[in-house]
Amino acid sequence: MVPFFARLQPCIVAKEAYGSAHYWARKLACLEQTVKLIAPPFVMPYVKGNKHDAADAAAICEAASHPSMRFVAVKTPQAQAVLALHRVRDGFIKA
Image (cartoon, rainbow, N blue to C red; front, side, top):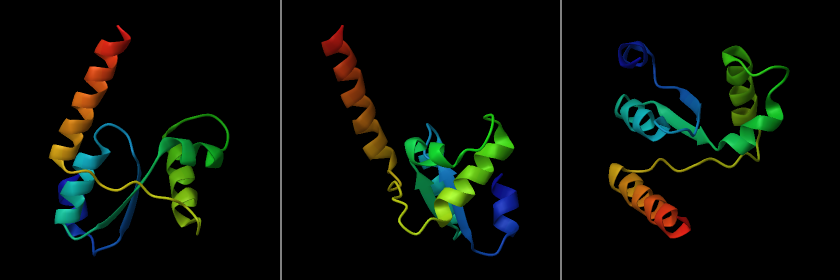
């Protein structure tokens, strides 16, 4: 994926904010791409029909172009590690 984006002129790359999205956002930002992450609940209203890659891509594109869309800030590796610690702690508390 990195060689593909390295050949592109700087553009906006919209992605759904899933597990490794922050890693890829940091990688693409190093290639001077503008990355916008969208939380999954904000993408779901735009999905038409069954869930598959093409429908997901269309939904993300439509959601990203919506003028009032809220985007997720790209997290640093340290911020992701702290968040993981909090989630593990919450899991221990629940158990």
